[in-house]
Amino acid sequence: MPVFAGSELTCLRGDRLVFTDLDFSLAPGGALVLLGPNGSGKSSLLRVMAGLLKPVRGRLSWDGATVADDPDAHRAKIQYVGHLDAVKPVLTAAENLAFWAALGGAADPAANAARALDRLGVPHIAGVPGRYLSAGQKRRLNLARLLAAPAVLWLLDEPTVALDRAAIALFEGLIAEHRAQGGMVVLSTHTDIATPGGAELHLDDFTPYADDEHPDDHHHEGEDAP
Ligand SMILES: Nc1ncnc2c1ncn2[C@@H]1O[C@H](COP(=O)(O)OP(=O)(O)OP(=O)(O)O)[C@@H](O)[C@H]1O
Image (cartoon, protein in one colour):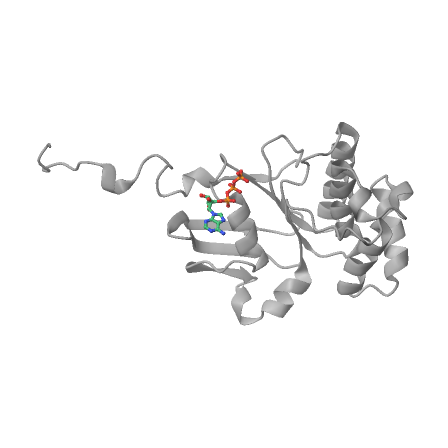
């Protein structure tokens, strides 16, 4: 089973340097929790890992092989669940899920969809159109994608937002199961999500300067005071 790693990653959004010289490494069964205040770059790093955002510097690799050399192979290994939900409002929950399962190459997308809704504790929403689902039901549906269209690396942006306690506990169980089978998880969060033995990455350790502090604002030694 391969190791997923990033080295010297530097990310620019607009004209703002979000993080710089960031390294990480994730072995089979591993979990990495991204922490940091609003705007510190957690979502940006997840998008970089998913190949949705190109870092201005640095590289991602699987067992040393550069991701950028074979983006299709990378896409086949990941399942990215962003914090904006991707539920299509006119399709039912089951149809939404079957659509993702089919994209993931499932032999029987409808069966995968039904099984995943069961595991997420929401079989009763199968026939409900996306537009009628509650926030928590939508989130469960997005997370059900991880089961309906399996991938070795889960990239999850604030996965527990809108989930009730029972769903959070259930979701922690799914992560543990995935890791026990050699799967890997990277997730961002502002709350506690149990990932025993997982590593933490604090994004503000890689932020060049805080929001209210720009290097140009500093007076350096030897400069004349105004
Ligand atoms: N499309 C964009 N264009 C320009 N700047 C952006 C864009 N998206 C994000 N940013 C900026 O990049 C920085 C990092 O944002 P990001 O969403 O990665 O942070 P975050 O740690 O996930 O924040 P939160 O905890 O609020 O979700 C912020 O300063 C944000 O304003």
